Image (cartoon, rainbow, N blue to C red; front, side):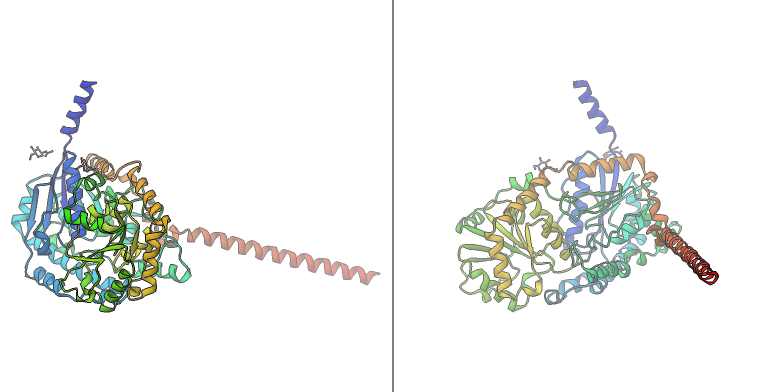
Length: 527
Ligand SMILES: *[C@@H]1O[C@H](CO)[C@@H](O)[C@H](O)[C@H]1NC(C)=O
Ligand SMILES: *[C@@H]1O[C@H](CO)[C@@H](O)[C@H](O)[C@H]1NC(C)=O
């Protein structure tokens, strides 16, 4: 027994692999997801290097990893810094009063793709960073699918294996390139406003979005790395060489759908419930949570700010909150001027909230959230009922995804100025038992899921390091034309056959009837 244990220990140690996690620091949710992947592999005993070029100088201030210490950074240039300044000063107030659609989302994505393109050029010119990266032989590179520069880097560093890892649910482009089925009739696309039940018009939109939305592959210029000796290659073909695709989607939370064996849903990797429950709240939070019979946390995340919402929304929310005198509302609000909420004694405005600790506290009754994926996953794991007010990007989809579990009520952001809608939603989420019950059920399922996200990551990453590109997982469906894939050719043959047989039968019966008619009339004549 002891020998076996010791043997296992030795085997575990001697099979440390080298992983490179390419983590451009451009947005918090993306950076912390990839940081968590790096830490998970480091904690499992592997050698992990994180390449973290700074795109957003704000993210350079705080480390995105805990246990991963081998970090190679790269400074942004003036172009990227200017872009970030513009982002910092942009008017996000518009997002509160306009609905986003595939076109506005596309515009935003095109701009980001341009910055990623610049980041790629910077890398190709930075001999020092390239040399540092070259110093180690990596077994596997992990990166997000829109960071298409990673395909260049992989070729340049001659890394045999990749695991595309997205901090979002699977996007339709990656799906198409790897041959993943896209059931647009009942699975909402990444930017969809709809749930799984769609009418004809909504299904048409769901298809339309997938047809017209452009991804980052169009913006990759393999020439950027040509001067470094990387020969041009077919980028869409590159996707299919990924050993696995790690997707930030948990099968017990997300819409059910058919997937490839290659696609591994690791949603929840960022949430450690044990650790969250161990965190202790400061005294002032305990006082707040004890103040009334119920407490509601209100936070719209760290990208769009509450302070930017129209004043009608703010006044209306205050009016609704005041109508619940037995409830304390903790509102994450980014400005000190809260004069719009005079004499609202049950509202506490605060710049910062210990979100996960509050969600883990039994005294918290409900969460009003923008339904960012990180928050949506966290509230699912911690079993808190929610009112979702999605603002942009994948948040509308996340809200519908949660709604399916009966743990939440989704509200259109344009209704934030509507007294009855908000009042009714709060009334129901606070006083109808069903929501809390369903939230707890989902949390229990997540706590008991057969294979934890952490195990999925480690086992698949090790398998990929050992076996490299796993050609046997590459489906033939990827290589078929759309016509063949949807059995258009087969349907055509069947239709043609039915048509021909019907035609022949028709001819036959015509002949038969004219024959019978003639023989009858000739019979009559002879009589
Ligand atoms: C991992 O890193 C350690 C320390 O840097 C080194 O001794 C070891 O050889 C590395 N392992 C591999 C597989 O490269
Ligand atoms: C979660 O956190 C606890 C306490 O910090 C730790 O012991 C445990 O290993 C962590 N689990 C995972 C899956 O990281």
